[in-house]
View (spheres, rainbow, N blue to C red):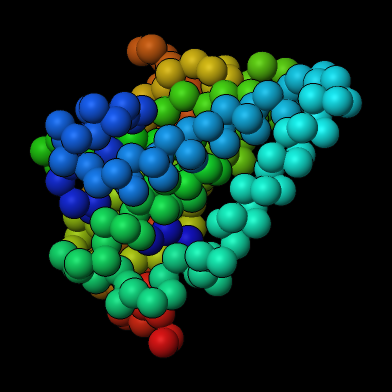
Length: 229
């Protein structure tokens, strides 16, 4: 299921941002620190996933992680939609919900993140998935490739101007995607038939296509992406 909406202009234009660059780009201090924290947690996840870390060092890391969790806990919500109107066409809450998206949200520690921008009638994405996303030796797990496709197809389907949810997605894996290797993704809208919106996408390493996908999305009501409170 994807919250397929075209992010506001500027969402996904850059990746790691220093405090000085954040000021130049008009980012708030809070947004910059959220992105810094998420980037550090992504890197730590990769170290924990691959490293044979000495027990004493693991103890220090675990103690620090537990302290950080306690610090963040009072400010947590049950859902990123809680306390917000939700996603709407051109809605005021869209940017903060995109920022915390699990695949392309740069303030989300699980997100690679996938950086997406619209170019004409197509969407282009870039990402580098590190060791935390490894499946078979040195290769990105296919489930993460599927998640990238869900986002890219959803962005293309959003050009239909509807709120949508994923109906079906067909993926053809043609070659492995190596971890820690920059990948490119492309997607475009195919057609709209009633509530069904069709899109196509591909992932490339260099100029070689590693995977292709087609998706059918279903237009949904506004309650799909709004908070009940």
